[in-house]
Length: 105
Image 1 (tube, rainbow, N blue to C red):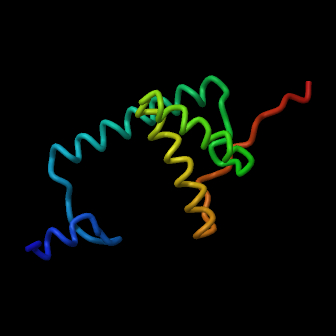
Image 2 (image 1 turned 180 degrees about the horizontal axis):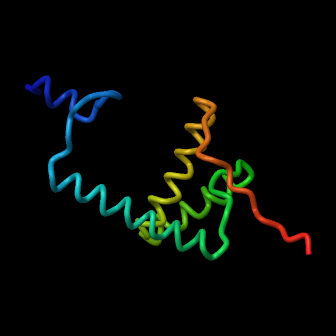
Image 3 (image 1 turned 120 degrees about the horizontal axis):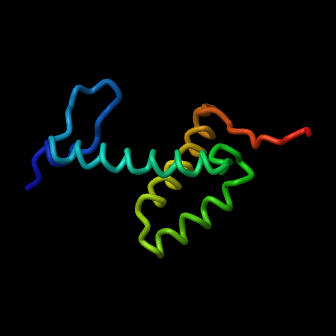
């Protein structure tokens, strides 16, 4: 028989005061830090489009490729981008559309 605690595990509502256990929290923080470093590197090298609806197809293709290659950092970064598109569509939110800079010179 499954306890009520086990059935509701993972169903954390906004505002809940639950805390991850120390090892799980460290794992999530380390993974997020690795993703942020990867995204920073890409941003500094001129990549853009994480928030551009026209890039959704390319993001999905890259996600599939990185899944096959088991590149979990890129998978996490690309999954976050897909999540962002879904969140925008549902709630009308955005984390700031990044525009490709063009030179007028």
